[in-house]
Image (tube, rainbow, N blue to C red; front, side, top):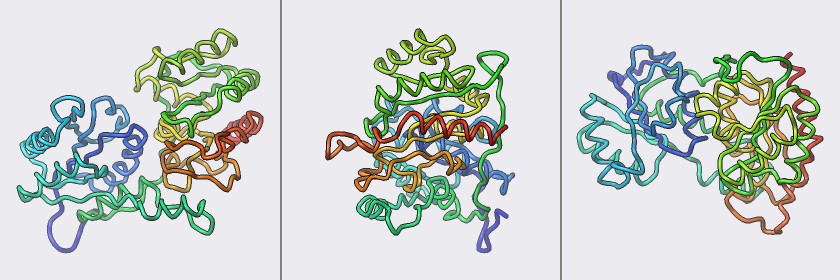
Length: 344
């Protein structure tokens, strides 16, 4: 593994991806397979410092990308490219392919450094949305698209397998009983569980399990999570209590996580924790399901209008978000119980 027939392989590979969080969180799966096949390869990940915990346990170095500061502009990306060349990088895998990363690639190529970039399959995704996926196989997973970029540079290695379960130090101390997490929020309404149903789901989870943790971020989410914490003695709102590395560690200790098409689903995939994923406006067949997440954990409504977008950022054409309201809290709890029992 890891050799090509016509020339030497790169010895120092730079892998570039700066957003979004869920997409960056899928990258370690691909790097795990690459590093296992090519143990002598030096890998530097160019990303935001916030995302470093995703890569814990991998033999990689980092080049910090400050997208809101010195690297915000295209000129800033040329500056970043100069930093990469000083590190001795001799190949670039751009697994982002946006305007900034294109500028970075151009600078590297002008200095004779080979680059490769991701094929996001935009035409396939448009066709999937247009047809609702009917008659189509699930599209190539994003993790495998990342692997394809490395292969363009000459590396040969098998596709990654799902991450094995690993238990990190529990930030909430010794675990007693069955613990689950619930992440009802997302950046877009089409991927956010409706509040009334989320409240009922918290009640049911608190009734069925010994401890429930609510993952949240913004002010509205914080208000909801803290209200649930006050209402149920075994519910804990995580907002403000943990950094990203602590949240990952907690997820590794949970028996199951309930998540939308959002970051927490990918955190669970990184540490091998079972996840029940709720899908509304988006679709797991578009290639963004948590890598290795069980199909048994996918919960989605059979609506002719979905998926209506790749990222869940378009308004509902009917205004009722039936794709989400049709998913009952009872059906979600049933899936959680099933996955927890199977794991036990």
